[in-house]
Image 1 (cartoon, rainbow, N blue to C red):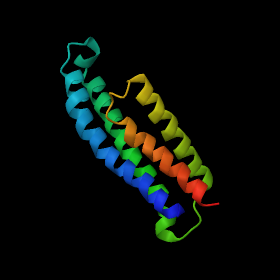
Image 2: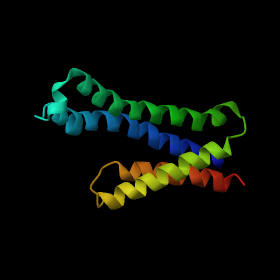
Image 3: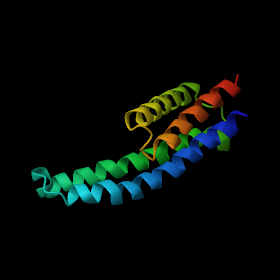
Image 4: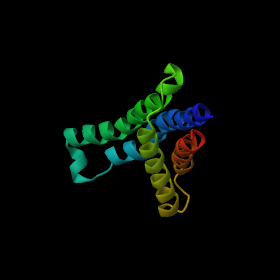
Length: 125
């Protein structure tokens, strides 16, 4: 059962990553880069903003890979890694939901990632 929950946690990340990049680019990054803020007049600042945003999406895919690796290889899952991923995503997802009053589109998937990761631990003994 642990592998099912790890797959669900990873799937939530794999869905979140491109949604984060695409929707964030359209709804947040492009408007910021087109704004009149003084700092956005510098090419370096514009590159850093875009890079940092999309780096988050890449990191989600990397985290998903490391959640799935024990499922594919048959190796014992790293319980500490799963715990850290689960707690971090659960806390960030709940904080996101509360602080945006549920208006941010990402909180359900981030929260689900945490719940599934923690469920994997709970189901694995």
